[in-house]
Length: 160
Ligand SMILES: [Zn+2]
Image (cartoon, rainbow, N blue to C red; front, side, top):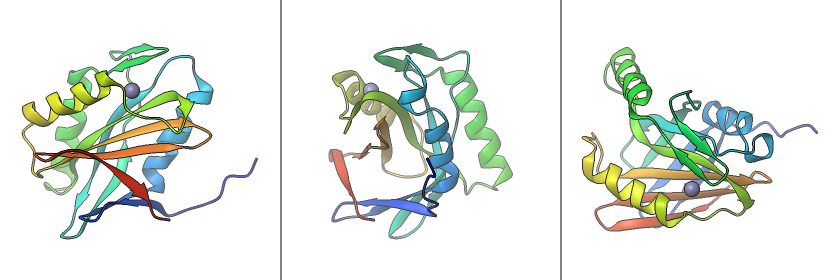
């Protein structure tokens, strides 16, 4: 099946929008839940602007991650290295924006473990921005996208 070529997909709430670029979607498609019995995941890297954020890169799973049919626990070590390298290469512009993983369900929703994980990451991570994104890739190219800030975790709606 021919997949439609897109530049980015955009999600938004009343406050701010998030553009996920094809370069990141490529990774989501490569590790889509149809392809594996275990969940896949990684980190999201991108740029921050006044009115929106952009996810440019999603990292692939590593052999140090814990992957199971209903769980994905990302190892901190390789991810931190990737964050540091991207940050250096881009002179501090390409930054850590959050986490992604797959679910073997259509129209995925975050599990209680996912919510705890993003809350914990938000508390513990030293960030350049005041929010973090959680992206879940479901079956049939469905997404759940949320923004975690001090106000809580808010679901964003796909707008294109
Ligand atoms: Zn999950």
